[in-house]
Image 1: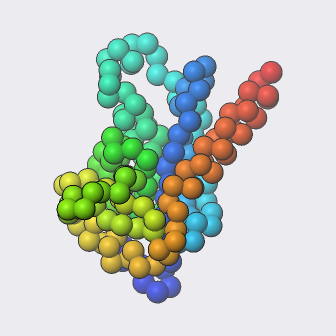
Image 2: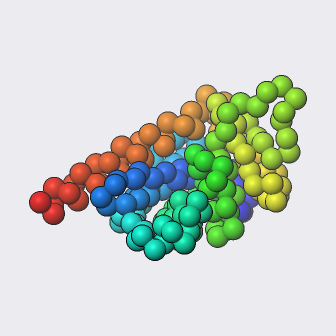
Length: 176
């Protein structure tokens, strides 16, 4: 991640997905400015693993699909690169292995005394970084003052899921 200077506004990426039993997983990446205003949105076509993949990947299938297939693809494709990518589940922190920018997961507020070196408060939420990526935490901490304390980092995930739901409805309507 490059340092964000005064002319380079801090950008947040929000990676979410929706799952449809018939069509598979569709992922979306929304890049916003520090105020949550959209700068760019990209989504994938549905990805549906076959039965053999479900068996062979087992419990690692979902993290594989969302991190390596969906997340990595979207971050390579997007034109406006985020300085930080946020995911909703800690299991998706492995995305960091495949992309050049920090990745953090939204987590519940830690109990007093449970704050660790992999956690950071940003806006109204707490973020968890991969334990082996402490440099990412340091870089994001330096830029964190650009994000308002009132920022709700959960809300953009709802927008993404709603947009993906509309995309799926449109695709179904076209194929009917």
